[in-house]
Length: 281
Image (cartoon, rainbow, N blue to C red; front, side, top):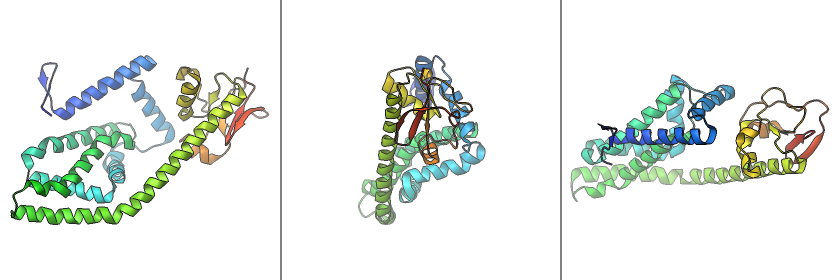
């Protein structure tokens, strides 16, 4: 990608992409919530509430570990090999991709260092570039002249990376099956929550954690701001949606604890692990 002109100044491609993404995020926040910095402030608040790791240690230790979990050890080794080979053999052609990897990684590390969590989705661009570099390590030797010493050495490295990928394949297939099972469980848990609310008949019940708000807003075609999130004291009227077990609290709502329903509050709706406490009026 050529270096584009932005407001009359030349900026690197990676910086241009970051600016466009930031502008889109600010615009979406402004249109949806009326506050352009909503995502940043909410994320920082939720991070503090959930006790997730942030700061310099998270940026230097946990972030690389998360990236390695995303691309898996075999492809991580391949990415390192591809990075080194690109620098040594085809430097000019590979510099844009290498620069993008460094810039995107540094930008994410800076955000984590100042207080945002190192969520795997933030690492999508670096992870994609790592996969491309691993692919380069596996197939880049074909761009070199036949019989060249560098081609033979590259082929040997590609064989090692390919062997690592093959050895790790059964484990990766198991991880994919586990992920599929978790997605199914998440879907069923969310559907049960919506069913419990529908049976209760509460129009805008309070919820035990923010994770449930988008589901209710979409299902009921109402603004997300209409659903209160109860952190300490549940409401005595209007309905309160809360799971029965700690497993759903941790694995679905993604928090450590929730406010329990008021003593003596009647159950006005139930499905699966979910209970809606009333009255709803």
